[in-house]
Image 1: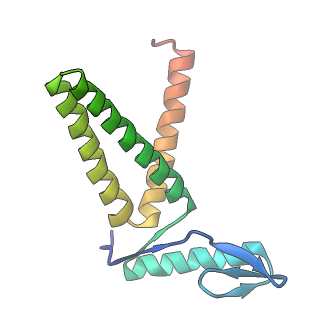
Image 2 (image 1 turned 90 degrees about the vertical axis):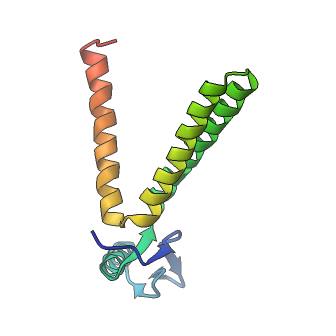
Length: 138
């Protein structure tokens, strides 16, 4: 795995302007598919140079990560408020660990690695659903 030297966003990746499809790199294309392919090629070239590019799917998982952090810190605060010091420290510590792990995952890994991890996580969740549903483990 290459070391990350820079982070760039790929927020609005492909758009249409004056009847031509444009990508954020500055290229002009005849179709949306050509523009998306050119952008994927650019992301691969950036990855080879050590530039991390945040894509649309990263935005979805960043949002999930952010919501999970907020929930853990709200739980930690409510447990602290109910005078359970150990429980509050536990949930607060898990929240801090999630903060650090998410930061390292999103900003220190390349898009190709994150994409593989998204497929792995999705596969595990789907397999878990079918195991619990059809084998009645609960």
